[in-house]
Image (cartoon, rainbow, N blue to C red; front, side, top):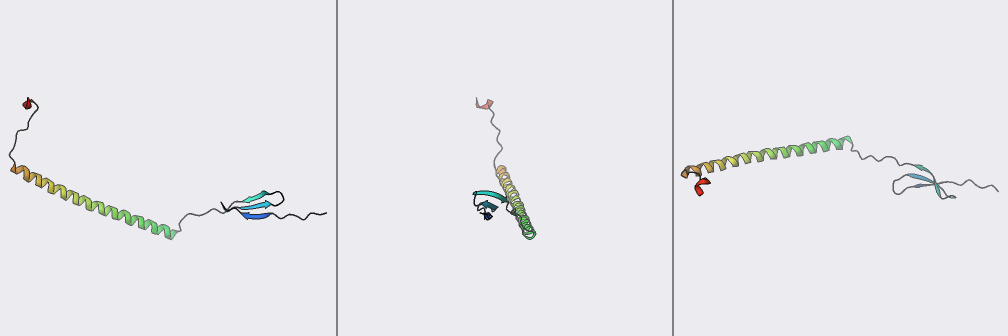
Amino acid sequence: MVQPKSKNLSIECPCCGALLAIDPELGKVVSHEAPPPKRNALDLDQAAALLKEQAARREAIFRQSTEDMKIQSQLLEKKFEAALEKSKDEPVKKPTRDIDLD
């Protein structure tokens, strides 16, 4: 008797998407074809938009920090002027030394 040629089963792997050829008589994998590589890269339009968004965010953070520095310098100036006015009204005292405390 002539045995008909057995056909291999082609199955796609559920985990990685590879194409497996399985011999039904043996129950073993005969060949393996790797899945096509997945592309995670953005297209140029998306990449350009992302770069513009990041640049705008950096610029906004820089503007905010410069405004904070201006406010901080004005605050320190006001505190200094208030301390200077307060010190003008107080009489000058001789500082106490450790020797004077004995």
